Image 1 (tube, rainbow, N blue to C red):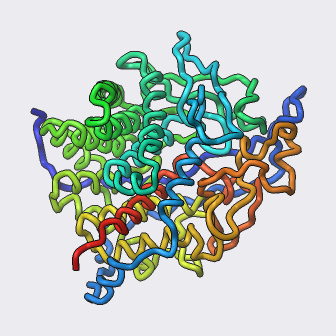
Image 2: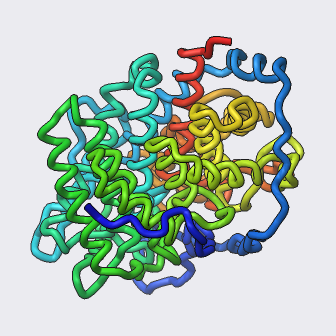
Image 3: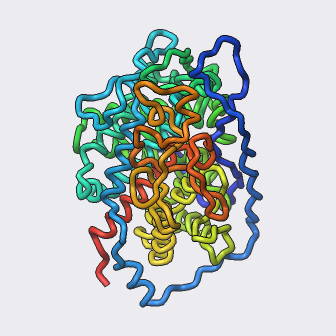
Length: 508
């Protein structure tokens, strides 16, 4: 058994900023054809957040009245959560790379990336394209699978009610099948397929790619604890989900998860890449250990997770929950698994800080506004945390009310839907190559077209509005109008939580 030393003692503060590190590809190479992507516009990157004051007075936490509790816990939604789940699932099918299965449901997508290989010809087909591009970035993809699987484990009844349970199992397995291929030996992991610097110069369908797709490999001389640990978390989560459904596959995922964790833990270092680079890896190590505890129920992993949480993940109030920052997720998962109050004490200050009564920046129509770059994914991440926390008994009415308000803003309460193909006045021109290209028109002609995308990217959550709810449905605006696998991940899990809560109303 691993020793448990000084758990729940003084915590070292760290903070991070997560942004999609898409940069404008403005260099023009001689001889590039019309498919080359042109960026005649620029956007400022999101500002760095101020570090939280760890000595601040407690945030407001007013007890709700019994009437408020009853109204929040029994209220039925005006939105069809099952429909939202169904459509978000279709978005992930549209993002698939590789040889598509016979039952794929996106008529305008075909096989792609069939020549993705490693240095020794390892088969690296499959997985998910990251966003509106065609790179397979390891860190956000693994985060996506982990968060989606957390929702599958907790809210299987919601997926069953939506008629998407089998598709959901297929969706997370599509990710872990790829991770297993990308992990050909214990200390080797392919963290990325494709290059942002190359890929972002071309506006083409994935089926028509001809540009080079280099791979980035982690090994003992090129560590990447953040990506290796997050992938271990994803594999451990899927191992948990498949324990009864497919015990052999569950065991295979667990084997790779444990090997990747050991690699991440022993080969300490950050992934050195231009896109999706983190500034720390301790939270991913704690996150992975917590998920391995969830998968194995062993004290060794429980103690390891507690040690790593105490050292790396029990900081003050993190910037967000997302692909580069797992701190509050570790605290919530460990509280779910152990019921120990020290973990809950790290969840509540985070969610409380997002509440409008505590001064969090909020748009006039009610969106908790963390950053101008993809603000909806930040709000969705916190909404998911708040909903799970509420189910575990942490400020149940208040957190549920806040999270519901945030998700409903995205579905239409702000005056428009930000989910493609759902609700009123939804986005018609998301920044997404495959959906913007027809069989005959692509390249700059498609990028610069004033017409809606010819293929509807059903279920995709776009980046979101500005701080005054201002939004322009502009294909070229990758700050407000790009989509991404990680954008939908916490959003979908939050919607699954809301549907689950409708299916199982509390007894008052």
